[in-house]
Amino acid sequence: MFTEEPDVRPFDYCLVPADGASDVQQLRFTGNSEQGLRDTLQRYFAKQGITSGQEVAFKDHMMGEVKKNEAKHTVQPPADKSPAVAAAAPPPEAQAEALLDLAMKQGSGSYEIVPVLYPEPANGYTGTSLYIDQVGRFKELPLNERASKMAQRDIRGDAFVLRNHDDPIKDKWARVDCQKEDVDGLIAVPPSAAEDPQRRAMRMQSAGQYTKVTPEMFAKAQSLREEGNNLYKKGELTDAEARYSSAIEQLNGRRDEVDQEEAKALELKCLLNRAQARLKGGKHSPAEGDCTTVLALDPRCVKALFRRAQARRALKDFDAALEDIAAATPLASAEEAPEITKLGETLQRERKQHQAKEREKFASMFGK
Image 1: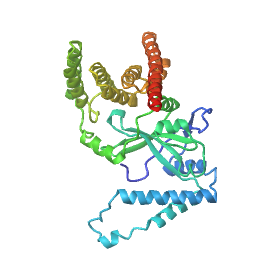
Image 2: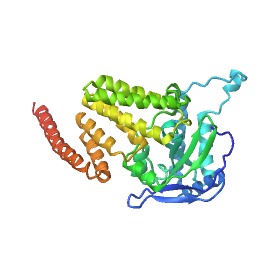
Image 3: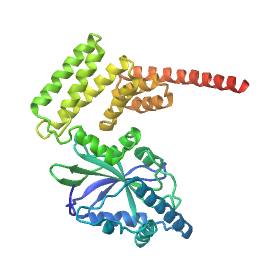
């Protein structure tokens, strides 16, 4: 991570209005500093003031968050500090008051950063985040349904979407363009629920985030995928799944020494192949997970949407499956469209049947 203010050049970012009838807007930041960007965002969020009643609610909320954080984390004193010095942290009341004062000094223009996609090898270390009004709930701003869908949490008021490149080894951090089509893709197919950052960091490190994918590893992954395809054709699903998993492991790491687009394409193929093998083998939840991973990397992948709909159908999650079909339909080619339409009709019919059975079951229960 960077330790000082990064160089900032003009870049594109987007505004997602809380008003669902308003289109996502692609904007251009023409400044040359992070402070300039912060000022721009704070001025925007400061347009709507905060009432005295909302001020009290905000302070109560921050008090709860501070106490929750204290209960969750046990802070150990630094090696060069005595326990008495470490224990001199401000009480929760003072911390909440300080946070409120900061928000007030900024004209209620303080903002919160909500990660949507974390930077990792699979996406070229490019992260995506929402910038939202920190006190939007207490200002009673309207629900932003599109931003809430992307973040998998309640977002109030307008939201900005920005992207950054964060390379942990090269210690390189920079703002990069976020265009309207990027945001539209995340709204159409949002990422899975946000993961705890600490747990995610530990998982990524243990998975070999800092391992380099060599040309030999890339060639091995190609060979393993071909082996998996041959085993799948023979009906040897367990062995095929294992080959696809091994291929994915070969591609897990930094990709400086290989063509990154080719490596990403191969990884997506392996994930889709493994999802298909798992679907045919009745492993519907893992298959759904593979498709979700693909869609986080390529939100417009029709095969992933179709196969996830198949997995969700088997899991009787008909509403979610129909959402996938709705997302896949406008993206499908002429060859893909009939099969997608057929699955959508089947899902509609089976959902009605399922709902009828549920009503009958509950009617029987209350009748007794």
